[in-house]
Picture 1 (spheres, rainbow, N blue to C red):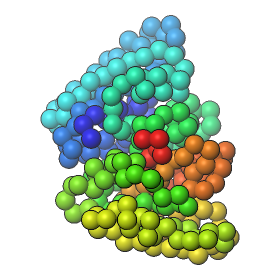
Picture 2 (picture 1 turned 180 degrees about the horizontal axis):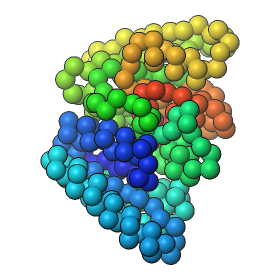
Picture 3 (picture 1 turned 180 degrees about the vertical axis):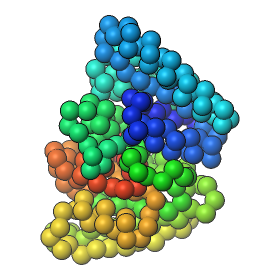
Length: 258
């Protein structure tokens, strides 16, 4: 993991995302690209944004992190997607507003919207997430075990740091015919991990995942977004958005097309 892209809108949420990205960059010896989107023909706004973005880049650079700043014009989500797809970043880091999410804030909705539109993993950082390198990882599993371990590569790269711990969690629904522990055991052969289950108690899957994350004091939650479904549920409202908005710790969203 050598190149992080951080979406910047100059909010407190973006500040937290950048601070978190810096901790990862320092550990991984990675570079950071700061990206800000302005409306078309917003000359005055672009000039002010360039000044502020340069100050942020200089601040990150003072910590020994190679940092570049970029400003683009256009609709936020579409432009971000194009920048991500055309670039070479390994991870997109963005703030998310959790319970304070405002639907009218286009940046607040960008994090979850990008899940549908890019194959690059996304790290969503809540406003109040502790700024530190993650050590205790919780991977929320669904009915489909990845076919190849490369799908988990972004998580495994972060796990290479010292003093990290990997836990897996599965919400066992009444319709489940089998448990995925053996499949994941084969997939993660040679990687130390522990597997936990919770039997279906009629609560939404997203709630169960967030509650277990808090119960075990995980400091990063890892989920997989799939085309058409996520954690075995339709993506329309629901689990992906609910977990990302409700989690008090950063959420690393992997893509099954990675």
